[in-house]
Image (spheres, rainbow, N blue to C red):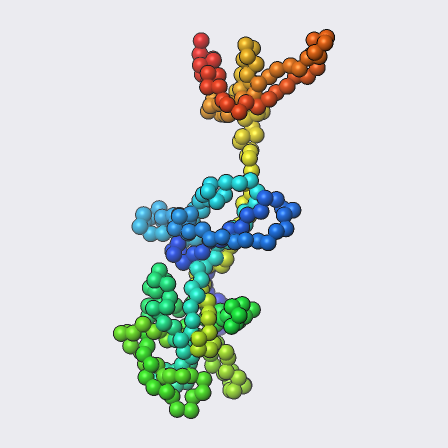
Length: 296
C-alpha cells in the first residue's frame, strides 16, 4: 500500500551572515549601459524579525530590507539581488580516506578561508553547500556543481599506492586546519563503472555557496513623488496670501509642503494682464503656518 510523499516547504532560518546583497542603478529603462554591480553590507540593511511566541527566536523567512539614501538617493531604477553568500577558495587536494579508499572527496584549507567564514567549515557545517568550479582564466564552468554531503577535519597520511586521482590519503583528525569534504555525485554509476564524475582538481579555484534559500531579484523605482505627496495637491489644506501672493500647500499634518509665488505678467504698454504665473519658491516662508493663519 502506497503511503504517498511527505514533506513541506518551510521558511529558512537564514542568518544575515549567510546572505549577499548586490545592486545596480539605472536612471531610466532606456539606458543600456554596462551593468555595474555593487555590494551592500547585509548587517546594515537586512533586519530579521523575531517570532512573537519567543523574542529570542528568529521568524524564518521574514526580513526587513532597508535602503540607505546614500546608495538609493537618486531617481531611477535599482535592481537588487539577494543571494546566498559565496565563499571563494582553492582545492588543496582531491583525495581519499585512508580507511575507506573508495570514498573520494575534496580537501580545503580552513586557514585560507576569510576569517568571517571559517566557522562554516567546522565538522558537518558544510553539509548541503554547493561547490561550483572555475576555469584557469577565472571564468565559471557553466552548470557544473556538486553538493557537499559531509565534511570533517582531516590530516594527510601517505601516498595511496596505485591511485592516480589523488595525491594523498586522509585520516580524520580535529587537530588540523584542513577539512575533507565528500560530495555527490562522486561515484561511478553501476551501468558504467569507469565513468567517475568530476569533483575537481588540486589547486582549482571553487565557489562554495549555502543552499538555504533561492536567490531573489527585486526592482525598486525611486521617484520624486508618491501617491500621498500627489494627493497633497488635490486634497490637503491650502492657503493663498492676498498680501504677497504666496500660495502654500500643506501635507495632511498641516505642515508646509510646497510654496509658490503667484503673480501676473502684464503688457508693458497697456497694463493688460497677459499671464498668471505660479512659480515655486526655493526658500520656504515659515510665517505661513496653517495653524497660525486659521487660529485668529
